[in-house]
Amino acid sequence: MLVKLQNWESSQPLIPEIETNLAQLPPSRPAIYAKINFAESLMMLEQTRGEKKAVSDSNALKIAQLLATAIQQAKEIKDPRAEAYSLNELGKLYQENDQIADAAILTQQALTIAQEINATDLVARTAGQLGAIAKKQADSNSAIAAYEIAFNNLQSLRSDLVAINRDVQFNFKESVEPTYRDYVSLLLQKDSQSNLKQALQVMEALQLAELDNFFRDACLDNTNPVVLEKIDLHAAVIYPIILSDRLEVILSVPNQPLRHYSAHLSKQQIEATLKQLYSSLSPGYPSDERLRLSQEVYNWLVAPAQTTLQKSNIKTLVFIPDGLLRNVPMAALYNGKQYLIENYSVVLSPGLQLFPQGLQRRKLSVLAAGLTEARQGFNPLPGVTGEIKQVTAEVNSKILLNNKFTKDTLKTAIENQSFPIVHLATHGQFSSDPEETFLLTWSDRISIQDFDRLFKNRRKKNIAPIELLVMSACQTAVGDNRATLGLAGFALRSGAESTLASLWSVSDESTSSLMKEFYAELSNPKLNKAQALQQAQIKIMANSLYKHPYFWSSFVLVGNWL
Image 1 (cartoon, helix red, strand yellow):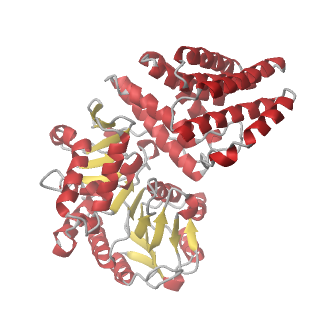
Image 2: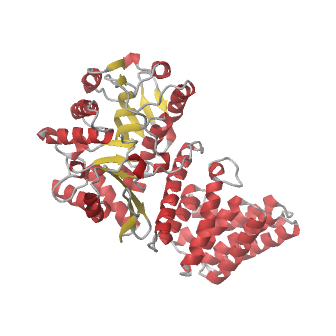
């Protein structure tokens, strides 16, 4: 723990004491695991303290001896799992010290044992390490083969990845995600349809794994990805993938082979630009700089596909964003003359395998709930009264306003009546921490878990799913790069086919105007939800008071756009 906290001075005196204690332990699996953990901490201490990639010779020898003892003890007590684990850790030491050939031999030995004893988690771990070693040796075929083994085993482990079982527990950021991304990086170096399809499957699995990691369970139904041709012939899917050395984009257009294109920039450069773009959407930022950044990201994601999109008569762009791209309102990307929303309706999806199958559009009726008064330290939202009035004016509706809007009253309303639309005009926050993701009610807060429970009873009673969940006054947590996981979380936990939410809290008046326009457009049977939002955003943009993207681009549609 001290090493992880980078508290070098306090960690040093513990080392001799730990060495003495470990030497006195009789051979057993806990004793061997203790040696492996100690070796891991010593390696981390060396690397982080000196900002070095390799471990110094004297310490490398000490760590190697420690692990050699662990291997010997595992053989003595006939514990193949502990032996494979120790061999893999020794392989990691050699890998970090650029003794690549030895690293490959040791890791292969570990993988063979892990496969023999059917230790799925160890197979995933050792195969992932073997893939990284083969990649370092510039042997991409062997690397792809090893990563495929790691990926398949991680997939079969899905429910255990977030389990409490300590033997199986993987650190998502350190173990799982790099394996998926390295695998995709290698697949996309060869331009074949089979590689592109596999890369998409891996990225969809990564999106799912991230959501599992967020929820701390694996209860999202892993359905098969939908076939675009069967949903919407005028929609194209854009999958951007942020890799360490480049941005890859896979384009899926109905009835055409997959294609991909890339921007050769480091992950650091990509993320720096995306953070700048997000900041530039604040009204005080210089417009020319904002447009330059918007156009740069447009050139990465959309420009190379423009000819294909026009030839195929594409009207809707479905983005399955990766990393920091989730925080970027795609509608505000700029081609030098127009914003993206002026030419396409725009949708976000956490992955097409989580696509909610659409029902026939039902007659609109709305359950609208909101707060206008200041509650629990949050500012008043005076515009909510007008917003809810406009939203419910033309349709059958039930309204829960201020002290009528609590967790219990919302639960009762949702459970007892089938509303195709649930509109929540209240403060809320999306965060990568489920504990910090909530919606505000009069006297309490609705968490992700509450949301799940709210809608579970509805599903049990076979009440039709909600077609559209609207959260009009929410925002993503400041400084949280993965905050939109919280937005995806609310969308998925509600079981709603589509979710409309704001990435940041916008002025009351413009939100009210946008919502009025959106519902007016939604009542037109010729427009789908994405087109209704597109037309509403274009109309708001035409108002000189609200032409800046800050006012209209924060609203994103997640899920089914039909």
